[in-house]
Amino acid sequence: MKASHRVGLTLIFCYLVAWFDRMAINMTLPSGMSRDLGIGPEREGWILSAFFLGYALCQVPGGMLADRFGGRKVILGALGWWSAFTALTGAMASLPAMLVTRFLFGIGEGVFPASVWKILGQWFTKKNRATANALVISAIALGPALTPLILAPVIAKYGWRACFWLLGFLGALCVLGAWRFVHSSIHTAPRVPPAEIAAFEADARSADANAERTLDQASFGQLLKAPIIWVLFSIALVFNITMYGWLNWLPSYLVRVKGLSLKGMALGASLPFMFAAVGCMSAGFISDRWFRGRRKLLVVGCQIVGGVCLWLFTRVDNVVTYMVLQSVAGFLLFMACGAIWTLPMVLLPPRLMGSGSGLINAGGQIGGFATNLLIGYYVGFRGGDYGAGFDVMLAALVLTTGLVFFGVVEKRTPALAPAAAAAG
Image (cartoon, rainbow, N blue to C red; front, side):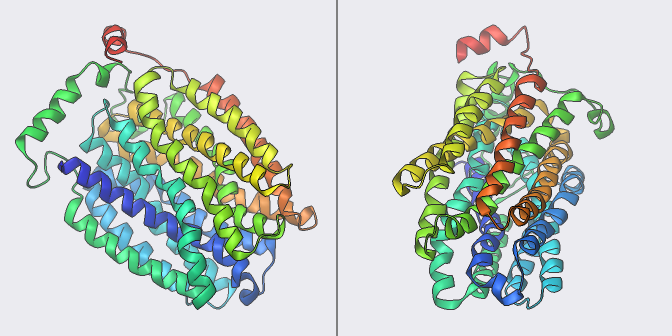
């Protein structure tokens, strides 16, 4: 196996466990945690948002640390930190203690994504970087797909607290895997065959790798002046209101609105995100293969059709029908998500990949923080109607589609565009 493939597989596993850790709270809130802590939907939103506050605050610092010290050190520190606070979540017995623990857990996970993108920028060229990134971030769909199936039996037999102790153990395995396989750069990693390095250099010089223009800002301060960065920041912020709203509130919606049992909720919350994982995985390849220089068209098309399916999901009662609609929505909206993240992967120069991607992702996590408060209070305002939360998600999706279509301007490299098109 290529060294770059070992790095990619290890990052996928670490990202997957990260999503198990953050999705577990969505399973446990309607399965005993809310009762034990004596809280309602508004305070459920507090707990969910406490994570996002810490997570959002550490996106840019995490990227700067990765740019300064290398992704390996930051990833190892992040894995150890958040795994410890995941395990501690299972020991919390009051709302204030839970809020502090989830905030500190968010800090640990917050420095992780930008360091992952920094690693990808140093191990994959623009020829295949978007594909590699889409495979890694497919964990944002695989995590929600697998979490209910893994944790529902644990909750049923051992209670909600045991989930977090199990996940803390998985985090320790991540630390060992990253220490063994993940290094900051293909040029500095030990035991990388010369032939693989030569192939990397050849890919970096290829027409496909140079068909799209990269931002040429020399510093983070100059990067802040690029309009496209703030467009992507805004897209990530608003789109995450839809995505995190769906991820975080779906288990409660299925139990409290659709009337599913714990077992039924586990399947209902899992199936659409299995399709979503396929959509996200394929987004990078499809974007690289057919949409270089016009990637936004893929995003907008997926958002429109996926949004219609998500809206219809809330309007039907037949189990088979709404699961089909939800699965199609999952496939398309997560393909859009994967395609959106191809943009910074090809636009940002490798030397600023950590801080630049961290800034864009910070927008997404601000959206994640706002999501749970917005939906929590809106559900409370609507008298506890958990279905009303989808009104917020769908409104955000409409706004995101407009931002992508009118705000993103893609440019090809004129001299290389014909060659790249021929190669495609």
